[in-house]
Length: 113
Length: 121
Image (cartoon, chains in turn green, red):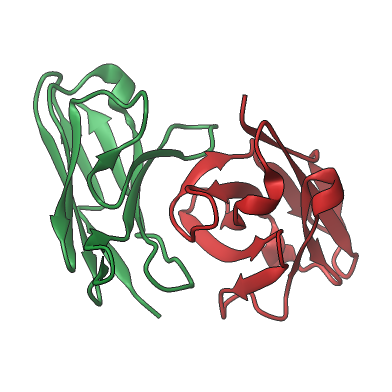
């Protein structure tokens, strides 16, 4: 099975700063047939189901602010949140969707200082 | 509106069986993979398995294979997750979720509200 590891486990940032969350896969998620990286990013706020932010590593879902960006390819990916706002407090997960089982990272908790 | 609505919370005893449901609406249910995700109290997300209602193709995580059964009735646009014998360690929130893209195995773009299962003697 593919192992997905996020870093850091948690981070505390100030309003207006930029947060960076990393996600590393134990094998490449790049599908040669369509040159897409099969990685998703989710945001989960307390008491709510996860919300998909990006699929294919960098394709933003409808309604997601452009303060959020996804990047990376192969085995290394990054979620960047710029101009942090109080509403961004959440746990963020990456998920590989290349081979089943579609494993999630362990999550990164983002807090505001 | 595309949505998934899950059945309500349950309290069960160890050894009991359970079947929870997830009803899709606002889209062609048969054309999208439906998966299940476990979240134990205070913990992260665990991918359990996924089914394509159109032909019942089903994939399980090895961690859940043999412990749960995923099924669907496309005539009523409903997916199911069931246990034949619950354990205390099954206490968790269970989410159903739709794979983005018709016919495609991918990230989950639509999620149910979650069903809390408590297993306690």
